[in-house]
Structures are given as structure tokens and as C-alpha cells.
Image 1: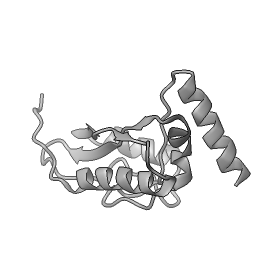
Image 2 (image 1 turned 120 degrees about the vertical axis):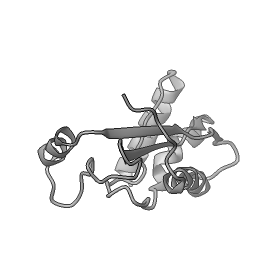
Image 3 (image 1 turned 180 degrees about the vertical axis):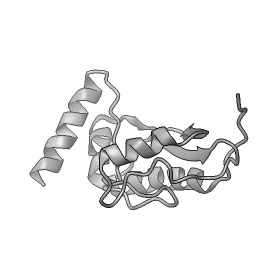
Image 4 (image 1 turned 60 degrees about the vertical axis):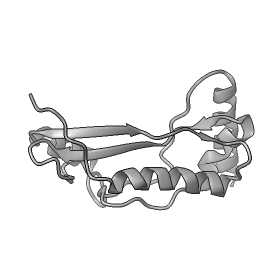
Amino acid sequence: RVSAREMADSAASLIEQGFSVVAFPEGTSGDGRDLGSFHSNIFEGAIKTGALVQPVTLKHLHGLTGMPTTAAIYIDDMTLMDSLKNVLATSNLIIQVHLGDCIASAGHGRKSLAQHAHQSIRDQLLTPARQTSHR
């Protein structure tokens, strides 16, 4: 609890100084097929400062098929080097970034803000990939 409070205070201080704070509220990594639950304490800094929260979704896609790929996963007993080797050995890997609509933190508690951000990201994960041009 002390660590979570310090993290929220640090995030709030940075936001008040004009910095953007990036967080990964799952607190873990997965295979990209679905989204785990969010740690709501991650959102405390935004609530303390009244900052907007912008959900960002990353999709890993095979460049030829446009289908999701697990080439960039970093899970279980994998080392960072194992993951990097997989990424570098994969041709036609596309990372699609979706910036969701900003969520005003005003009027939210940590849990409701976390739920809104989670839903936004999950909706994007489950939306079929858009066509991209290949060069």
C-alpha cells in the first residue's frame, strides 16, 4: 500500500509539472488475445490532479494476413532476449496503435476510471484490424 501511494503521489507530481505519465495498468503481460484486469491504484494520480486519461491499445498483427500474431509476446518463463529474438526473427510484423477517446477523471473513483479505460482498450482489442498498406 505504501508503494502504491508513493507511485500515485509521484504520478500526480509529474502531471502537475506538465509531464505525461504512461502506465500499464494490467501490471503484467499476456499473449494479446484478451485483456487482464487493471490495478485501479494506477489511476489515482489522474484523479488527484483532474487529468484526462487516454487509453492506448497496441495490436500485434501479421503484415500479410492482418490477423493477430503472438510474435511479440513476453510471457511466462520467457526472457526479454527470447522475446526480442522472436520479434527480430518475424517478418511482416505490424504494431497497430489505437488512441482511444480521452476519459475525464473528474467524478470518477479509481475503480470506475479503471473500468472505463479497460472497456475502451478491450473494445479495440476485439475490433477486427483495419487494413494497412504494405510496402
